[in-house]
Length: 155
Image 1: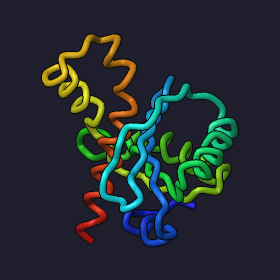
Image 2: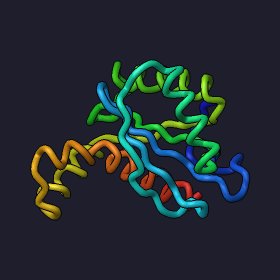
Image 3: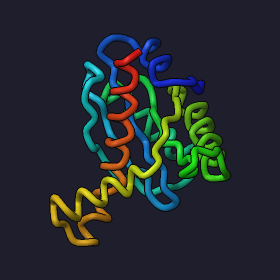
């Protein structure tokens, strides 16, 4: 099931359950986990992108282990806010993942999340390109999840 906003998704979560943030790339998927109070997002993992059903099985196992009750997936809107082909592909993909994993989901604007994370990793952490590539996807997922959690607290 796809919810319109993170607030709606959070309202249906059982108490003590987490949200998994997802930054889907063409080759890798970045994952981030919220804490049980839904206040803080932390980078969790990066997994290779593959078939939806295999990823959905992984999510079901992760949901049981980490008490994940919902998914927030980054929505790559165009810089001007338009809903282009990349955004449509992300919506179709997370809908399929949500249906296959039986985990409710919503989309959240991820414009420039990877750019912001890369800027941070270069300027503040001074990481090499190789080291940045290893962490950028899960950090972008965390960045997007944190923004969605913050926005839901204001409602």
